[in-house]
Image (cartoon, rainbow, N blue to C red):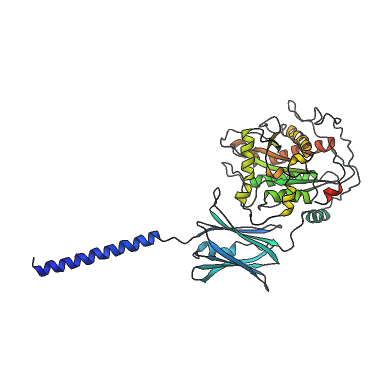
Length: 446
C-alpha cells in the first residue's frame, strides 16, 4: 500500500473514531438528561362536601394556580410535563351531576407548560397541593374544589330530616325496642348490666330529647382501605353497612343519624371527628373491615380509644394502619384548622371513656350472635378517629376482609343486613341502660 493510500486510510479511521465518540457523547448526554414527568392517571371524586381531582405522575412537578371570574374558572399551570393521552382524556372525567365542576380540559400553554382549566358551576375556595408517594400511589397533584360557603353538617342534617316523612318528636319518649334474644349458646351482652351502678335494661327508659348518632364509614375516595383477595374494597363495604344501619336506627322515634360520608370520597380523620361534634352527636360509631398479613385471621372486633397504649400488638398495628388513612387519602397539611386543634383533646380529660366502654361491650355482645369474635373482650388502641372528647366513640371491625370466607360474607347483602341489625341492637341496648343526659350549654357551642 502506498504512503498516499495509508494517509487516506488513517484520515478515514480518524473521522470514524471521531464520529463514534461524538455519537457516544450524545447518547450519554441523552441518558443523563432528566426525563420530563408524565401524568399517569386522573381520578375525579365528586361529593356534596367537595370535589377532588387527582393527577398521579411519576416524578415531582412544579405548578402555579389562580382563579378567574366571569365565568368562574380554576387555572393550573404545570411545568415540565408532556401533553399526553391521559391529559387529552380529561374532558370525559367530569360527570354532569358534579356539584362544582362544569368542565375540565388541558392543553399546551407554552413550551414546557401544560395548562389545566376547570370551568366551575359556582364560586369555590380551591386548594391545590402535592402528595408524596405512599402505598401503591406515586406522586400526586391534588385539586380540591370546596364551595365558597362550606357545607355545614348540622344544617345538612336538618335539611335531610325536613325532607323525610318521619317527624322527630324531641319531647316525647324514646321508644326503644326490646333487643331480640340471641341464638342458644350466644351471649347477647344482656345477661348483666354494663354498669353495676345501673339497673338492668327494661326497655322503659325515658329520654325527653332528640338522640343524634354519627356513623363513620371508614376510608373512601383515594383511600380504598383494605382490599380482599377477591377484589372487595373495604370502603365499599363500610358504606353499604353504614347506610343500612342508618335506615334501621332512624326507624326509632327521636333518633336521627348523620354519616361522615354518604358517597365514595375521602374524609380526613380529624374532619370525621369535627362533623360528629358539629351535629352534637350523642354516639359515634366508626365502621371498618379488618385485614391481616395472614388470611387465616377472622372474626369481628370492637375498639375504643386507649389512654395508656394499645391492648395488644395487633391492636397497635391496626390503629397505626387506620391512622395512616390520611396519608393514603391525601390531606393538605398546609391547612390548619383551629377548631380541630381544640377538639382533638386527650380523652382522659372527660368521662367519655367509661361510656365508650359500655357502648363497645353492648355492641360486641351482639356481634357474637352473627359472627365469630376475634377477641371476646373490647380492645383499645390510639385511633385518631375516636378522639372526640365528649362523644362515646367506638370502632367496629365487622370482619376480616383479608380472610376469603369473611370477604365473601362482607360482600353479601344478607350479611351486611345482619351486621347492621346486630349493631342496632347493641346501640339500643346501650341507650336503654344509659340514657343520655340533657345537652349542656357547652355542648351546643360545638
